[in-house]
Figure 1: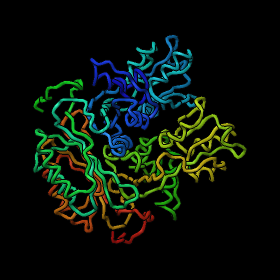
Figure 2: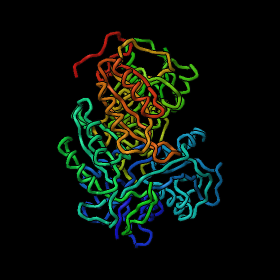
Figure 3: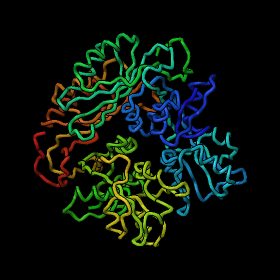
Figure 4: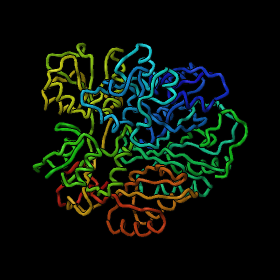
Length: 289
Length: 289
């Protein structure tokens, strides 16, 4: 099975893939952008893609929501990682030797307060992803240079950890989704969660009515995010995640909603997966929460 | 009047301040972080602060929402900028001379596709903010180095624009808010907009009911964003922006909501300001939208 990710082996996206498919032989299609991931799936260079979609610190990754929606992909599954950042360098280095740090821009952003403590001549340099910067330090024997990445990267590329849990906000959970082209369902789990998108005009109470329709059908919200529709003032789009006990409830709610909202789209129906259960299980996840 | 911003003269935050106070003598309190901005206001080193709060590309700046909420500040006004990024360097340079580009990490992120086109040895380096990197190029006569910043920065620091509108998504509007300590209202405008935050449990339909209460009082939503409450699974917090014709409607809705939601908080009541009207006007903004 081929899965496209942004980054290389050892990256957080690789870790998310391993959580979804611990027992399968996976060939990673390593891309240098999220756009590359969706293109690989579209062009069938990869069977599926895995994308970070939201984070407890920075919120939704709206550009990735837009990639999923505009590319007409289907969300097939989800997985969660607790992301902790580590500063790492060659075995011979200690923290006072470091004059340059490299990482993915989002990782650098998450460690901003920490990095601010270094002297002004200290250079913060953006790379393609967390793991490939660490790999480059190892391969080119770069002295005085550190990378910021996950713990598994230090282990994989034989680097020494100079400092641990260096991200500014300690609780840092990221949700990843598994995406595929429409009609290529990867799982036999019974869906109890869905991601939808719709638009509303700017009249008072329209969102309230839309949510009321969902409540009437026992559909529960786990996430809602409004965003302005570019180029059309006073129109709003909503990305909403919902959970339900019976898929039939969701279908009924969908029928009612479609008559009321504009450009209704189901981005995917899948099984809620807070426990990070592997993707190919056939039993229904029910844990009573 | 002293206003704290992240960045220096010529930065986008400075531009936002000028839009809010075009006719006042403003002393900028220049900070190197958003946290620094809120601390300056808290410690009365500045009368007010201006913070970017949401963006059409990346959505809400959740960390800044949290700074406003946790610091018990009041949102007093808002202003919008259409943000376009420019590549700039010394007058003697052309684009093929450039081997290094410096900017604020968020600006670099917004130009990622563009920067990807440069050769692999090209270095992308994070700085404190857009304008100070440009200033440094000028002051130190740095050859081969470019900055990414707004057009006004090139004008202010005498740099040549090498390329224009280089951000990946061309329509890039950012909303800024003016904040102050509670009780220091900066404006005499009649409020027709408010930013609120509240929490809800995970029962079906609770959000729908909360929005229904608002609709009943003619309160309109312009923005909604859910976020998980850290450390308390299945509890959600919502940041919501609303508009209304009569502040009394908002007060009535607030009274009903308080009995229904948890930890209700008004982050500020102010006049909606899509037209970027200066902050000290006494007339009410009414444009019939």
